[in-house]
Structure formats: structure tokens, C-alpha cells
Image 1 (cartoon, rainbow, N blue to C red):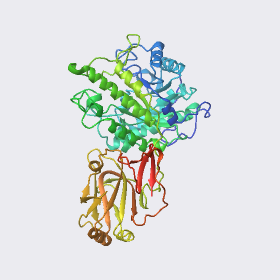
Image 2 (cartoon, rainbow, N blue to C red):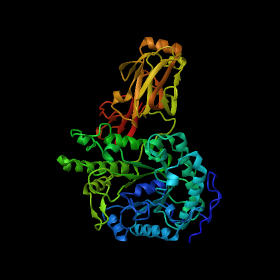
Image 3 (cartoon, rainbow, N blue to C red):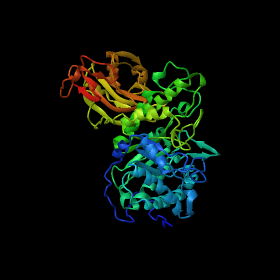
Image 4 (cartoon, rainbow, N blue to C red):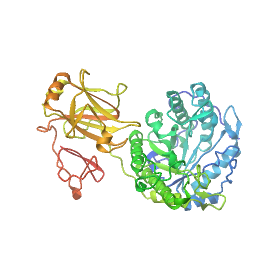
Length: 563
């Protein structure tokens, strides 16, 4: 029996004491390095997390030969979902039966023997992941802390290839309905508290766990929910934490349903998803990079996949499309540094929840060659270092008037005023550069008012006259997550009014990053020449430029400023 005492440190923000001294021996990988090392990840789905035990949902008992087959197919990482609380010897103190701990250990050891990276988590614990409520928060955190103390103590001496993930898909269950949509502030807050409890519990066990790669989750493991409601837990070590999200988007394709084709490559096919494609996928991942990766967190794409579904009149093309979807998903994950794990539940056929890849009942024969081929094709992608932006550095020539990262959401967000005195100093040829990121789920718009809110001026955006407001996504053909740069100029009449009243900038679905003021007759700042490597220089919108003027340009995936 593994003796796992209850945690008495619950409620503190960081683990301040450890059961044994921290041991950094062999624990050298940062979370981001760990994630980048995962070339192809696979889920041992519907096995150890099954209700009623490992074979409770119809899958065979996992064998070492199965793990060897996964490695032989090209995977170098395995996520092992585990349900623990059906296997407790002490329900109050959350002590796990030694037989169950030994069984999980056996499979972990098989994976590590194949030089694979491994994640174990808590999965389908109904008391925890269906109850993110204030009414159960204190007791759930007590139990979660005790459970992870038990698990972490048992695996404390394992090396850096083994990672722990605190929860899974925490979903509020209200009146018998699972709430997968936008979470309330309460649900977000409780999930955030689970994450902090998990971090504290594992770190407090000491040893190698003090430096272990730990994975925390957003509400429902939804990246979309996490972009606005996830709070990074405090930790006693740096750069050893990742955030996890799952991606079956768009679900009416990947989960089955009305659509059988995905992506621009299949734009001429029937029943193609209308608003989700390769660009949308990468834009989504770019937002995750900007929100989490650039803050030093690793990113784990803990589950992804597309169910096998097709119509008999075009099965071949639809299966090739499924292969393409898997390829694009892994390609985007690898490019951004995410550790991506394909969901495999050993279920085959045509319809929903048919995520099987290997036939575990048939000596691990490949049951969906299109999914496997797509994963292998995408895995060849190399990581691309994200562009870094240091605060205070202007990305267009001129004087930085405002610098930050603030959402514009009409009266609920940023409303920025440029005083008339600032406008006067640049004269009637003033240029107002807006540097911003589109951040919308419904629509996006930027609008100007005179400073007394009495009326809207007309203005010019990149030379085109606009009355009152404009929609950036329409002008630039961009999507949520994309960077935009707009140059605002004024007619003489509007300039004269703005000098008296000032200008107010507001909007919706936009994250404002910078406002730069300048005059084309006297741009302030050090002049630099335009780069000319290979003669290929592109604007932010992707158009090749042969004779660049002042502004921001892209070359060889790097940003250059021409002043």
C-alpha cells in the first residue's frame, strides 16, 4: 500500500516546503523544449480512463507489443489518460490502490523503454471535471491535492520524459447538461484553482517532481475559452509548465455531421466547411502562441482528430481530405512548437466518434491509413521561432503615441483619445498609424469620433476614403489572430476640427498594440535601408513589394522596418 497523507499546505499560492529535497539531476528540459521534442504524439484512448477498469469500454488490455507498434509507426510520445478514483483504497484521503499504481507504472515503463515522452493525467473523474462550482471548490481542491500527492510521490524518481497533467476536460454539468460553450466567470475561476492546487501538490513532493514538466488546462480544454479566462498558476520553478488545449475544430467536420470536406484545397467540393480552413487553423495557433508561448509556457495539444465519416459516392476523396486535415493539424502544431497527441479510441467505421488508428484487437494493424499518413506527413515540419516584439519598439516609422495590448470593445474596452495639441504638432499632413491584432468571434470594426463625442469624422485608410468606421477584415482580407497596420490620414476640414476637439478611437473585435504619429515630410527616427535579400520583400498583407516606402515589411519570415 502506498501511504499518501493528506496535504496540509492546501490554500497557499506556492509550495513552500517539500517532502524530500529537490533533485534536478537529469531534469534539464524546459517545457517548451519538451513540447518541441514531441514529433508525433498518440493517445491510449478509452483504456485506463474507462469506467469499470481498463477494459470497461471494450478495449483489450494494453500490452508491451502495442506500445512497440506505436513506436514503430513513428510516434515518439504517448498520452495515457487515467481514471484514478475508481481505484482508491481510501476515499477520504484519496489513496490509490497499489495494484492500480503498479499497472499504470507498467505501461509508463514500456513507453520509456522505447525512448518515448509520456503524459499521465486525471481523466473522467466526475466529482472533479463535472463540478467547477464554488459550492464544491474547497472539497474538490482538497481531494485533488491529496490525489496528486499520492500519484506524484509514487512516480517521484522518474526522469524528465514523464510529465503530469492535472485535469482533463472540466465541464460544468447543470440540470443534466454538459456546458461546452462559453464558461461563466465562476467555472473559469474554479478550473484555475484546480490548476494551482495541482502545481502546488506536485512541487511539494520534492525530488525530481520539483522540476518536472507539469501541464495545466483551460476550461473544457478549449483554447478559445483559455484565451480569455485562463490564469497562469504561480510556480516555484521557471519554464517547467505547459497549458493544454484540445482541437476537434470545426466539430461539424472533425466530429462528424454535415460536412465531409475541409480546407481551401477542397474549395470546389460539396459540403465543405464554410468558415474554417488552413488559414483559420494557423491564425488560431498564432493567437495561442501570442497568449501563452511568448510568456514562456509550453503548449500541449492533448487531443486532436477527425472522425472517419464519408458518403459512399465519394469515399476516396473524402478519406484523402481526412488525411489532409491530419497533415495540416500536425504541420501547424509542429511549426508552432506544440506537442500534439492524436486521439485514438480504437473505434472504426463511418460516423461519429470513429477516431481509431490502430486495431488493438488485431495485432495493431493500421485501421485508418489516411489518418496515419496525414500525421506522418505533417510531422516533417520544423519549428519556426515566433517573432518577438519588445514593448516600446515602434513597428512603423514615427513617434510612438501609445503602446500596449488592449481590447477595443466599444464602451467595455479601450477608448483612446489623441488630444488636439498632439495633432497640431504634426500639421495637416499627419499620419496616424494603427498597429493591431484582429480578435473577434462575431465581427470587427474601428471607429473615430471627435473628442467631444459629438459626431464622426470621415478619414482615409491607406488612401481610401471612409465615413465614420471601417471593418479591417474586409479591407485586408484578414482573419481573427492576424496583424494589421492601417495608415489614417485626414482631409483639411477634418484636421481643423480634430485640432479643436481631438480624436477618439474605439472599436470592437480588435486588440490595439500601437498608435504611431508622423508626418511624411519629416519622419522622426533613424533611417534604414530596405532589405534586398533575394529581392523578395512583402507587405503585411502578403503582396510582393519592389520599391518599398516607409512602413513594415516581411522577408524570409522576419519583420523589417523601413523608416
